[in-house]
Length: 177
Image 1 (cartoon, rainbow, N blue to C red):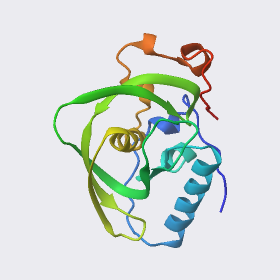
Image 2 (image 1 turned 135 degrees about the horizontal axis):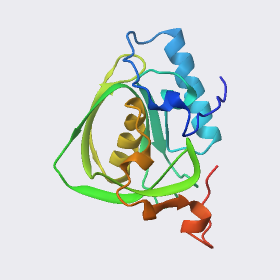
Image 3 (image 1 turned 90 degrees about the vertical axis):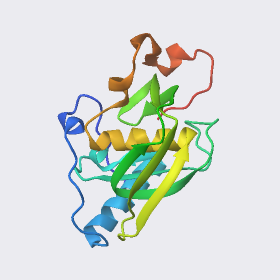
Image 4 (image 1 turned 45 degrees about the vertical axis):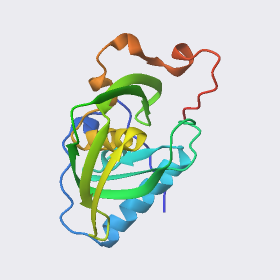
C-alpha cells in the first residue's frame, strides 16, 4: 500500500491515548495494517503502533525473522494485534537496550516484564491469546506502550543509560534507520 512517515518524539500525537478499534475486517482497517507493514518493513522495525503514523487506534504490528537493528534477537512471529490487553506473568523485570522508529538513532536501557500474557484480536476479529517471554514480551510491551502515549525513554530509570547509538556503542556496527 504505502510507506507512511513516522512521527518523532516531540510530536504531541505520540502522547495521546489510542482508541479501541470498533469494527474488524473492514477495508479501512486492512489498509491501515498494510501501510503499517510497509512502513515497518521499509525501516527495518521490529514493530510499529498505529499512533506512530498518526492514527490514534489500538493497532500494533510486530515480528522479527532476522532484523539488522536487533541482530541478536530471537524470532518473533509476525502479528497484527488489535485492542490488546497485557497481563504480566509475575513480577520479574529484565533490562535491555531498546530503540524506536519514533526516537531515531538512540537507544536506552529499559526495564520490562520478562514474562507476559497478551490478548486481543487480529484484523479479522480472530482472538489472539499468547504467553511469551524475553524479546517477544519486550516488543509487545514496547509497541503497546505507544497506545497509552508512552515512549520508551519515559521508562528509563537512569538516563546515563540513554543516548545516541554511536556514542553508547562506539565502533560497533549497530544499524538504526
